[in-house]
Length: 163
Ligand SMILES: CC(C)(COP(=O)(O)OP(=O)(O)OC[C@H]1O[C@@H](n2cnc3c(N)ncnc32)[C@H](O)[C@@H]1OP(=O)(O)O)[C@@H](O)C(=O)NCCC(=O)NCCS
Image (tube, rainbow, N blue to C red):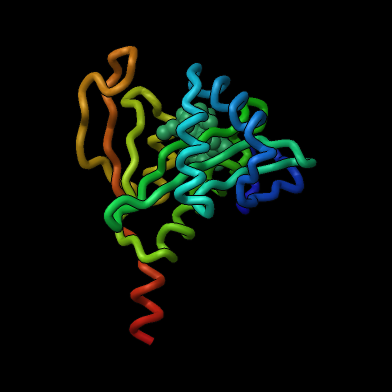
């Protein structure tokens, strides 16, 4: 994992979500988005148990990412890092993990929506080769538009097939 110049946080572990992490993920979701969609996460976890990862520091959940696959297109449903731990590369590490997991499952395209005013997240996604492909007006409850971003990726499945 890249260590950021802004803040160094030792011993960040990225691992699969387990149901015991749910209270911490829920609290993080509330803090990051000011709303609670965490019940969706549990539903998604039932369908896509290996597309839900958490970042931990000293066994404390400090970030999470939730992905899924619909009709062979990967989707990043949610990504968040605890405020005190932002700017240290954890968001990027979680994003790299989920991209790797989805692309190893054979998806060639990964899509996500991000608030138009979320410059930090847009910058992070652009740094991982996501491109802005669409805008959905009034997508969020407060009327903010969503920018749809897509990454045309590398498919490990196709790679190994061609070996
Ligand atoms: C978006 C979020 C997950 C990023 O997590 P993070 O751990 O702070 O991000 P990282 O430290 O890995 O930084 C990755 C990149 O994000 C961008 N970034 C991070 N912090 C930034 C800041 N304060 N200002 C501008 N860009 C920033 C940079 O491009 C950075 O790469 P760089 O360090 O090479 O310049 C985090 O800010 C967050 O949880 N936000 C609230 C929830 C949210 O908006 N989620 C995304 C929903 S689509």
